[in-house]
Amino acid sequence: MEQTMDDVLIKAETLIEALPYIRDFNGKRVVVKYGGSAMIDEQLQESLIKDVALLKLVGMEPIIVHGGGKEINKWLGYMGKKSEFVEGLRVTDEETMEVAEMVLGKVNKHLVQMMEKLGVKAAGISGKDGATMLCKKKTVNGKDIGFVGEVTSVNSDLIDTLIAQNFVPIIAPIGMDENFQAYNINADEAASAVAKCIRAEKLAFMTDIEGVCLDPQDPETLISVLPVCEAKRLIEDGTIGGGMIPKIRNCIEAVEQGVNRVHILDGRREHCLLLEFYTHKGIGTAIINNRVGLYPHEKREI
Image (cartoon, rainbow, N blue to C red):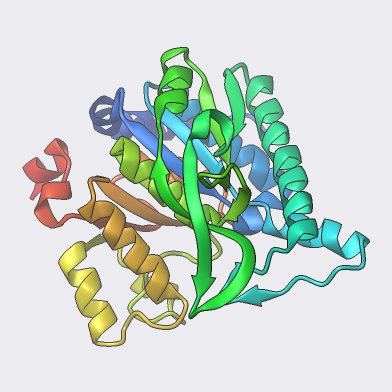
């Protein structure tokens, strides 16, 4: 369909709206945790990779940490093996660990391929490469859940080298302990650990929810900017409950340990990263360290 001049002007205005954000984010690092429904829909996959490619091309330094739970479930199903979870963590025996590492490697290289297709250099690694993610065995309420790791330290040397050479690092959440035993790491935890280590400007979680809402059943109550002090209050008074509590606490911890903003985004919406990062209103929830987390142009607008 032929575009009118009004359509063209609207696009120009959108670009102008993004200008202060492009300026403020130039040279800044952003960690994108990629998972959920966005990973199994080809159109959403393409949308996300295009967003990350654009972040790179306009001057940011993006890093992707990805999951692959649904794909792991699929391959375990082919083997006749049922997936078991304890408090959201996959019980990982030796056979499941082998499948997880194989599948996450496959997912990793597919994402690299998609990024390279757009003309942006990408390098796929796991937390084992360069001893990027060291971990220890994780238990849940004293229960052994197998080869599930808890990150104890992140070494950013390999990440720094890749970024310096103009690559987008794409990281699979497999780490190892001091005895070189491989462990499966929850992708949210892995992304948060990387972001805290490199003191990222932003950490964005692709989820299957709109963000933090005062009423979970009403998207109109979405909170666009949520200071840490307010997030803690909403947990205390029960507004934030259930499965959102550990996710929000993880976000609060990341902000308190040096990440400037943590974004909770609906990965089911195309181009959610660009809409959140480069528009005034955004489309998700940004958790910030109170007024300290405001950008220069935002402070001028208050």
